Length: 305
Image 1 (cartoon, rainbow, N blue to C red):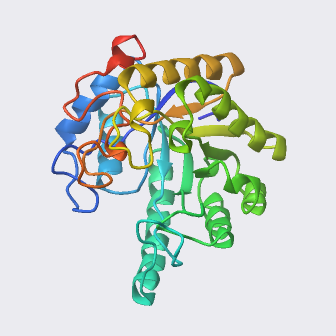
Image 2: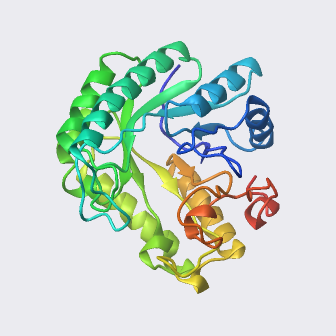
């Protein structure tokens, strides 16, 4: 498989339905995943997965068995190895938990290497973690450790290796890691940073260009960018969100990405009610271009796909 990181139709996929979550160990069935992928296959050619768990294994298997034309960014989820008192929702952990997480992280990265080799025809890039170094994370890992994980993984697989993180750490604490990974993967969320829909695309472009200018010799891609459609006012102003705002932002973002030949994974395919607080309007639950019942939002109805 050749590795080119220019524009293609890419989206983040996590298929957890109501009553399911990785925290509960309840995963979508093979039939549910097959149904989701059949919905996505005509409009999207690349998927991003977040962990080497039962969900990811089933996704890869369904893609192969159904001969679906998807490439996959396979993610390894690395849990907290350090406490982070700066995390607003609880980032302080016991030493026993941290030690257990270190063990689990090694096992997770071992699965990532194994599955990347087994599914070389599908997996085109592997990430050694997700948002594990940003100041507010609840699963903090030292950047030097992430760098070591990246080096170790690169020695075991033929695919390029990356790390998915908010754009800010790539401008300071991840400078050394940038030299180790094969490509830089950034997240940019204008709506979380109180930007209006009129400011959104220019803010995203500023984030991308800032990282690209700091690391001119590395490919830079966007592995999360999206717009929630609901908010209870916690973290995201209520008047900044709607299906119309989501449709506009994603349409403008894809147009820019196509024009500039930038790979962008939209966040995300489906709403996930297990995320965030119990409030039904919690912003974390509503980033999908389809709702949790698999009904299309306005972005899809306006041909986003």
